[in-house]
Length: 366
Image (cartoon, rainbow, N blue to C red):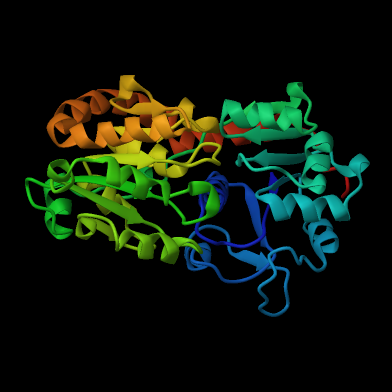
């Protein structure tokens, strides 16, 4: 089968990570896969060159424009794909400008966000032969934005840590400078408005001084809001216990070393960071947000709270007690880990897409 996968730009993000992982696995199963990008660059671009099918880039020279897709229609038609799948807002929007609704048999739309959708994206959802979402929440959002409920399928994210060597916990803690008495809580993700990491600074101030001095709050990730959050953290009490690591190529090192994770996002579908936390067996405290509530539960040693000031106070209480409760919560999450490893097995989830492709018509614009 000839599969064309379209993505605008390989920034650091969950959608881009899934784009690379899925296309590599489909190619590994013997399918002819073409990765089509709008522009070069991005933190994940070297990975696209090193692993999986080589990308083809539409822009003839480097630009900052993620939306510009010159020769998109002619390039798609020249590949003569059997199936086409779009990833991300710009890919859907640009595709909607180049192809008529009557030409979209064999097209798979995807929805991996909790954000509002532009009109072009909504048009693709209504016309695509199938839409894949990574959470039940996103499936409902797809239907609200024009997709037929009978054409929407939920395929959860595969965890990329299945292909990584997750280090031993004690070795990872030693390498990152953690002492035995340190209780490290990790916030993993890009610094973009929907992630709302600045809310954790308010949470931090609610924790008693004695507990704060036993905690370490680590942020791993980068993005346009990082500097603002980092500057604000400098003025906090016990601010030396908060550390910003920036973008890392080895998040598994931090996940192996941590005692828990925390998320205060206001805009998600099914975040890869939390999937990775469950994969290694970490308890997670999170605000109830879209597909997050499909991942976090007390059964897995975590805490799920409402997106409110009271919810933030409950996360503060959870963090305050975590140095004493971490061992018990880790044990509860470890017992759930085997469920997570089947649920987020990337090989099984990539096969789910291939089974869907088998049921669809050939891309009709060719």
